[in-house]
Image (cartoon, rainbow, N blue to C red):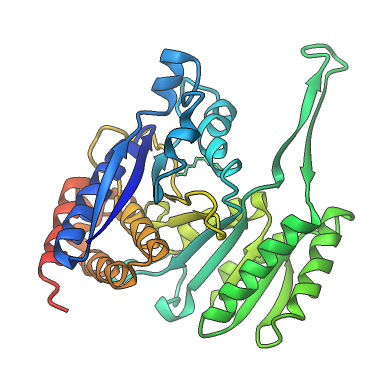
Length: 358
Ligand code: GGG
């Protein structure tokens, strides 16, 4: 019997509710699927920890989770802590030192969910966005001088390295190759950003030569928003810089019905460090504590974690349960226009797992 040790970091707001739901479903799945167990170690890091101690996580935080098989993360962000403090103090403080450079964001129209696009069905919207997750606009390079004075200067410098761009391109081309359509769209802004983004394009073309069986094209990020909306079926795998992909994946989630269903994996593909799995959504303080957060994004995220752990049949089993639940509009939470609670959706997922005899 395999036993996985998972570090659970629910974080802020609805992160608490969806991670509890995710653990309940994963434990039910492990029991149903057999062959593996999951042991969760709980870490109370986040904005409350910051208010108590002055840090989002302890100084030895990464040391305490670096031996785990995976990290199951909720959300970060609180109305009474500046967003840049909470984001850099927790999510990015894990992603960047653990070199989780490939952020993978699948988007599909799940059964029973209608997106806002007219005449667009599940066959027309089936994407994976690959977000460069270690540098670019999130390099953390910059500063402020002469604070508060009329001559104040502030910079955020986007850093792109040949090594960083080449590895995310290789990852994205390989992922595109593994999907039936073998198609990759490289998002850029090299008309306006004439140094790093031009290098980004050049490296894309160089890496493309290693993948002659993958068809690829290039889109300016502004035009990409239009293509995603007007011609979704023309897209399959997409690779973009840290910031561009962050924005595009919110659009993708909205086009697939709700941010509440969107999953993500922060991968260290070489497995030198644990990878981290989280729903795309943030802490959503407006609905925190009301019991109406959509746990589907976390359940889908759990399938990505299972795939990473090598438990593909269990991941497929969980995905079938998710699709059974979303197919029933009575089990839609308010973000999907329904009235179901987090608890009802979770119970339905557990029941769907129990009833799956495959
Ligand atoms: N679960 C994802 C999450 O908590 N995101 C918070 C956030 O503000 N993210 C911004 C970013 O990562 O760029």
